[in-house]
Amino acid sequence: MTPAEIREEILDILSEIAPDEDLSSIDDSKSFREQLEMDSMDFLDIVMELRKRHRVQIPEGEYGNLASMGSTVSYLEPKMRDIVNA
Image (tube, rainbow, N blue to C red; front, top):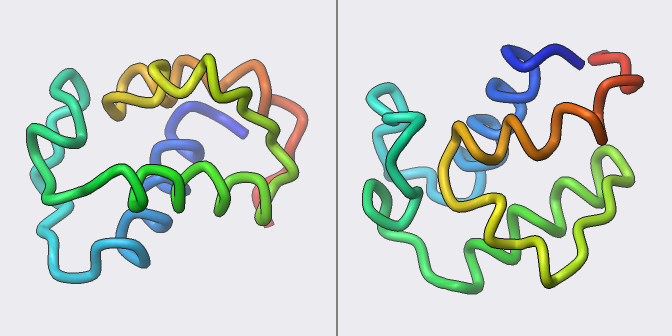
């Protein structure tokens, strides 16, 4: 997957987890928590959804890499490089 495809996938996951949030104005450099009303369970839902959809394993110690859209895409890019977006 390309960085743009990963970003779209994260937006899709966020739209399921937080359907009432306006995701059109996500600032890639700001943390999700700063921009969206998300708690730690919502954050874990993102991790679980990535695992379910793409078998991407994210160790608990690396969850901090998923703080913002920019850091999430950068972190996931090498892990998802060989995944073909269906």
